[in-house]
Amino acid sequence: MNTQQSLLAAVIGKPISHSLSPAIYRSAFASQGIEGEYRAVEADSSTISALLAELRVQHISGLSVTMPLKEAIISHLDVIDADAELLNAVNCVDFIDGVATGHNTDGDGCCDALEQQGGALLSGAHAVVLGAGGTARSVALALGRRGARVAIINRTTENAEALVRALAPSARLSGGDIVVGSIAEIARAGVLVNTTSVGMHSEESPISANVMHRNLVVLDAVYSPMETTLLKAARQAGGVTVDGLWMLIQQARRQCVYQFGWNPDAVPMREAAERELAARRK
Image (cartoon, rainbow, N blue to C red; front, side):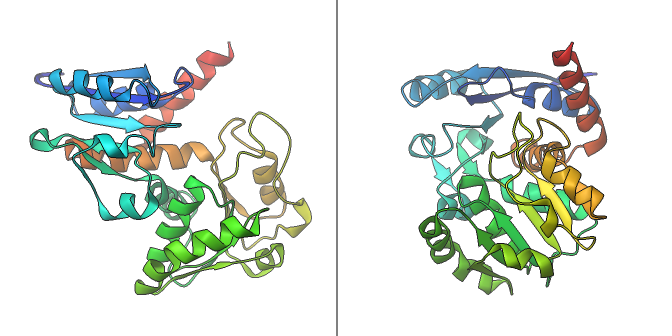
């Protein structure tokens, strides 16, 4: 362990006790031979300003941001990058040279998991995203930026339309596109991503099992349970499945690049997260 390199990092949100980030980041620190402290700190919009000031005094290097602070934190930062501004959401902050800069790694983390764990080819792919909330926005933008045609399916059509208006022009600049879609799109899709909370701690599924097919790579952002009903149906149909824990790991790896300048191995991070989940089930 290199005690000459000591880092302070944290994750903030409310509630925060469920977060896997401490286990994941401590593993990342260890893999780099770095002595680091990683805290989980409960905060909301009324306490975030004082907390950030305190963490700056303590020379924090990296901050992960979860609900409900991804929008609220923006006004407290010095800079936000172009994608975070477009998405109006920050999940990652670095403090290089004392400047607090916000980023959003959710979408690229999802795409990394689709490519690296799912074997998906995203350029030219026909992708379907379920949901139109914050996670859907980041995923749709990242998919479109990688050249995919992305169909947004959401119960409230107006929200899907708003997402398309905001993000489609940027996706088209990279050869992709984002449109409002329907369940029928899944029949000819190669990629399916669930960004809704349907299936979390339940056996519900956001769509019927009979629309699944063997040519799909399916990622569910939900990771509790690890194999959701959606992923089970995709596997039984012969498709390739990627659980939400891989998305969490991959977006954390991208955060490490912004915050610390290195990209840790995904495997030890995954193993640390699985050990933490197993300990919680005891």
